[in-house]
Image (tube, rainbow, N blue to C red):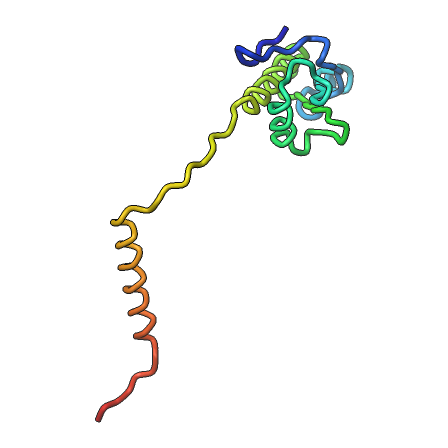
Length: 140
């Protein structure tokens, strides 16, 4: 079990890990060792994710989400396989934790009298500036 929030924990069998060859630094080692980790997590079929969290996670994932509802994360920041694995899992947990936070509904508020007055004063100043741009009339 991987704890995400006090209410949400993921089973290890829900996460599919595969090791691939990483790009970037590593010299000859990068051609021989599969140190990068690709995590696949099926959001739609997860038993442990509430529906609202799953919907927010799919929106939050963006291009990392496949058409089938599978979240794909690739970690290749480090040269060691185990550190990349821990990094990928931490990124998955952080993404799910961010999706678990419900957005706060906006409550409509009314503008204060002072803000209305400042807005109208600014409009009249701007109106005066624009009125002064017109043709100059000579009264000679």
